[in-house]
Image (cartoon, rainbow, N blue to C red; front, side):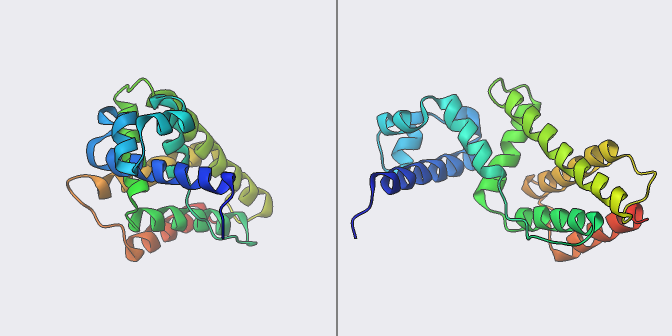
Length: 195
């Protein structure tokens, strides 16, 4: 069956993103060029430029793509939804996908004042903290989360906890993020926030 132009374009972009992720996970974002990504994806630098424009735009696309992870839907309470989100995040870290490693490595680079990544991760972290805080607010409203919980503070706490656990897994220390650790984190979360 003949593929459409949109299908071919999507396949090219996927191959380029996957190649960029692999290179970033191995070498960091600073060492990655459009030409190198093109070679790794089986294309020319021109194809990469045509699809993404610049190195900065490619890095931004990698950050957006690497941040995505599946979160099972839940119709439970706010606290249940928060626990599901935390389990999904830690499950994603446990899976050791190259995209997760690249995302965390670039997050560390953004902290070190990498000019392209700094603003991207500042926005990503703000958005994630806000999402976490919103679920806490929902839990307060439905009575599953303590009324005295500060949603914004919990958002900061959970973002730090989740990113910190992820960084420990990708660091040379190599802490294993497994189901037992995820269960412990969720149990502490539930005990600390339950109404």
